[in-house]
Length: 278
Image (cartoon, helix red, strand yellow):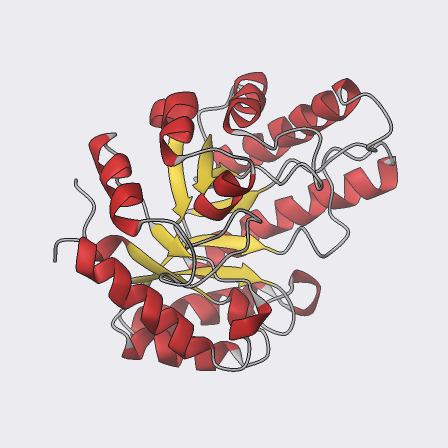
């Protein structure tokens, strides 16, 4: 199935100064077919929510004519780190993702996004890599039992010494060796490490299962389409040629959009619709 306007996916990250209902209202008004739910306060932080809350959220999304493409629990701002040398932190992180899988099932999401975490920057990364792979293997086993998929995203070098590039991401996938864990591409993150869509396609091949498609600048900032230097047409053409058929999720994070988030999402949706077939 080729990429089309039905592939466009909205995300609530840059709505955190507003209610989750405001995001869903705007996504519905823009005619978005699917959404990626960022699980963080004040919208959907796990510690403040129940499985019943997840079921209710999934129901209201479906009532609005949309589907959930992915559940992305916050794991960069909060103390979550699968590669940590601190056992208590690592164990809490594993429990966090196991609970995220349960929430994902209840809200009708097919997948949970995970990140590799990091070891200490002043220590060799080998141990962190092993810790991460072992943790992901445990989480992947539960995901398989629940019929869920894991989307593994690389983190910037300042945040991870485990997987910051496409090749490093593939190394983690190979180490975990589970059919339910796949790699994903963040176009802003790729630009930040000097990589391209083609680099991720080459490294991940058919293991590329999810994409955060956003404009950016060399710093890796997540911008609305038209505010950076990337070409949506070039990104989409490369993904389409490689046979990618997943979601194209608009993960805007820059603070310039926090007070008027709909304008940024509308600008991005319209830009993508111009280069995608109906």
